[in-house]
Length: 204
Image (cartoon, rainbow, N blue to C red; front, side, top):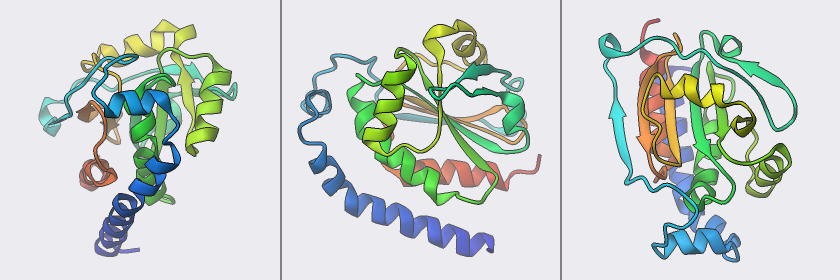
């Protein structure tokens, strides 16, 4: 598929996500934490104010090297994603904006199916069964590292970029360096797909 056709496809997917988001959120209407978040109650998460930082290629730090175990018991490491653009989302189950943004992250994930792009969650608080239940409830199909059992995972990312709010989403370039950072709730899948497209277009 050409780059132009791929971008048109992603734009259409993102537009469909915006249109369908109302229905998705309505289906989650009994989610009290998500409702508290929408009402402006910051309980249960560290607030971000939605900021996007893009880092020029010549200003990026060292590659992030990490290893961890997912909610399904699989060991993953930075070496598994070598050569791919990697999207990393920091979250936990009781985080209201994490629940609200989950369908948007999954929409972005689906838009890059078959391309050199991977998604990985970093669950900062929960045990594996809670993270797996969240994934099933919110339709998240990519894995998450359970970081509460291994502080080294969080430290590896914190050494490369500030991760002071939950949720935070990072885009790592093909060399494993932080190329962009979204602090706070992802407002729309198209924001993330644009950042990933930019990283894909770069020469490694």
